[in-house]
Length: 310
Image (cartoon, rainbow, N blue to C red; front, side):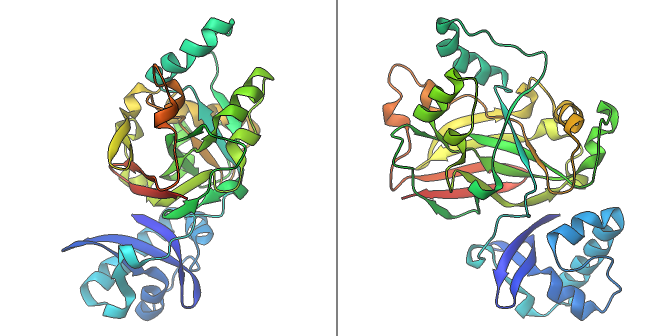
């Protein structure tokens, strides 16, 4: 199920993305539930759906099947007309770093010349603030402190239940679904911070966390290593990879970060594949984002996260 949050006439709504002739359409799940008069096991909110577990998903699938067969036309609208929100109320986001093999190699080309060695005994991570996150089709203005405004497509595991010190074999059972992050970065500040052994400001200006467009539930992703990623800027492919190149798999990432204690609404990202602007040789400047650029971050199985630079 592809499910997200959007703004409707009655406020926040749950939308289910469905294939239709001519493109995608979105079902107002709450309206369908009300009309179906089934005893729903969750309220019309993403948090409630996540908390309801398998029984909630089964109930939602039943309503969706009925709505596609017998539903009112007013419950559906073309996807491009939907005013999407960030797909969930984010609790915490632990963002990965240097976790694709090819990206590790391209990034360490700079740091190894300065005496910094790569370590892969444990995953690298930093905090991406929920306050930085914006939905698909958002207009993002680069902070004035940067001319090196960079893109990074990342796959994201959405945690659906509380888990602590989970073993690797059971780790994915805590995942509700998967979505997409464009980890926008102010590289001058990030590089200065990394020299000071930190990453915070360069990743967390307002708008630097496009997230979405929706969540693909985990029941439709039996093997997240099969997820394939592609990022384009104005139609030009800049990043393209598969999660088979991950140094730490999704289950290993969840296991490791569960040492902190994870809960519903937490996000764990994979890190980004090769092709970021800062690593382009010999001159990265033409690759940094500028006003007017349109960035499409696509995970084939999930969808496309669209961001407009202004």
